Every structure is written in C-alpha cells, then in structure tokens.
Length: 305
Image 1 (cartoon, rainbow, N blue to C red):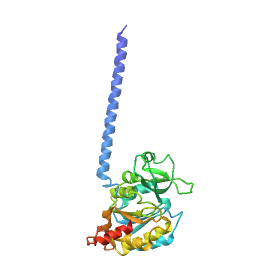
Image 2: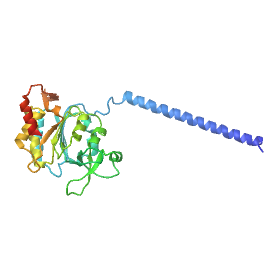
Image 3: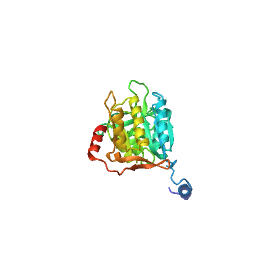
Image 4: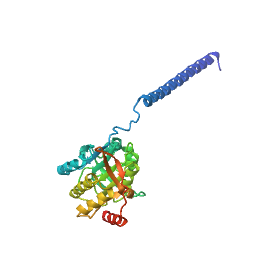
C-alpha cells in the first residue's frame, strides 16, 4: 500500500537527484566556458603561426648515410659550393633522420634540401600505384606511429643483406603528415630510384617544392656523390637552370656504370628554374625567361631522360 512515508522518501530522492543533475549541468557549463576562454587566450596571445620555426631561408644536407657510408670529402666539397649562396647550411647526420625529423622539415624554410638518403621504389600495395620510400634511421616497431602505419604513411624497410629494420616514409607521409609547406624548395634526392616513379616527387611538389631531382634507377654511392657535386656546381656556381644543370651533369659523369640509371628532374616545368643570388642570399628559385633553341632543348631532354 502506498503510504505518506513512502511518498516522502520518493520526494526526497527526487529532490536529491534534481540537485545532482543541476550541479553536473553547472559544472559542464563552467568546464566548456573555461575551455573556450583558454582557446581564446591562446589564439589571441599565443604565437601567430606556431608551425613556422624560422622564416630565414636556409639549405639542408640530410646525410642519412653518414654512418654506413661516410664521405668527408663530399661533405666538405659541397659545403664550399653551398657557402657561395651566403645562406646558413644545416647538416643532419644519420642519427637525426627520424620520422619526426621528416615531419618537421617544411617548418624551416629550406630553399634547397639535399637528401643523401637511401631510397627504394621496390614498394607497392594492391590497388595503389607503385611508390618510392625514403629510409629513416629510426628502428622499426609496430608500437610507434601506429595510425601512420595503418594507412601506409610509414612502412618498414631494410638495407639489402642487413638485419636491422627501420621506418621509411612514403609519398602519403609527405602529403598528409609533414607539418606546414615548403617554400619553392629544390629537392635533390641522391638515393636510388627516386624518379623511377613520380609519386614521391609529385608529393613534394604538391607540398610546395619547386623541383625534384633524382635517379630513375639504382645508383652507387660513389657515383651519386660525384654527380651531386657536379650538379651543385652547375646550379650554384654557374647559375644554370635545373634542365641545364642536369644535362651538363649527365654529360660530365654519365649514367651509373652498373645500372645505367640517369639523373632526371620533375616536373617538366621546373626545367627553367634557377637560383638567383641577390645580396649574397637566395631570393627564391626563379624562372629564366631567356629563349632557348627548341632543337637544343629536345637534345638535352634526350640526354637527361
């Protein structure tokens, strides 16, 4: 039977429940308001563009091979050439070349990046075009970069006849995981097969790079070192365009002796890009407007490709 005492108990319980719900409601309102105030203060008083670390134009040498295949003569030679630009040159040895290192590269406003990095085009996934992978020096584990592993932004790679397994970055990492954008950067990828497929090159271009220069097949370390020195002399000391520099380099050093691979550039419109030195700094990769003989141009394209 429903008594007055039972009614009082139900009323008391209902009142307590109502007060609890009201307190929770007030707490949530205060929590949301605090979060909004925090965001407002961050965007008002915080850094205007937290993605930009340094707006000063610079050059980067990424020497992923510095431990397995060091070459001090190569480093000293290209440093001398690069010093002609008047720009600061940042050198990154093998141990610095991690997944997060690649992630942050666009933040530094590099006008030229030289990747002395092992790469491979022996990578494919069913249903997708074949792609190029750049190695890191970060040991592979399935517990790191999990989301990026799941959608093939990073993969595991290893050197031939070698036991350690490392992380490698794919074109999807460049397009989806790199933080920020490049600023008309010229990319020189010294490793194997960087332009066997254009997927990696296109990812860099879409990310703001101006030109991508690499090999269409395997290349020995000695040969790519020699070719890169020649290429940089043509680009920086002689102020040639990308197309001219690649053609002259191939004429001087030739294809790789073992695999017959050649140096190419991407995209085709980048052929007219050249470095312009203004007050001892690179203003930007610029476009030469001088007319070229069309027959001469076709001959160079045949040499390069």
